[in-house]
Image 1 (cartoon, one colour):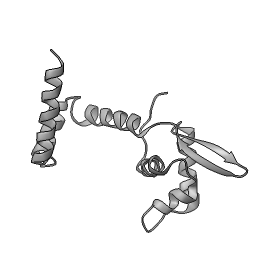
Image 2 (cartoon, rainbow, N blue to C red):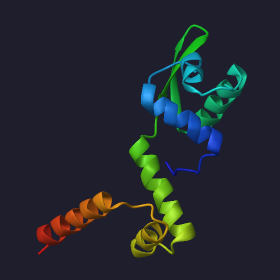
Image 3 (cartoon, rainbow, N blue to C red):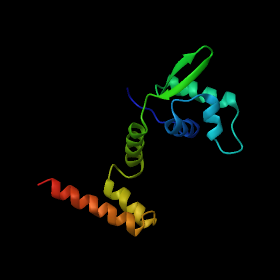
Length: 125
């Protein structure tokens, strides 16, 4: 299945679903901050996510319990790829230097990244 970009509202619902799945619309609604969207709004977004292949459901009479069909890791990989393609010319170096310039990375995170790079270098002769 080819992933498609989610709207902000769809992504917000998916973030909640990934955290509490399997779940019902009423439970998703409880996780929204005030002012909460209408029940019908969340229900409509869930139906759209089903049409896009992101969500599945199990029926219990007229009630549906929803679960993700696309994992958070799968979507994270897709979204990061789109971000790199659209804004950083598919360059990890470009993206990393942006975060450094914008001070989005602190020294602890930079040290951890360097540790991961060293580990990668040592495991690939």
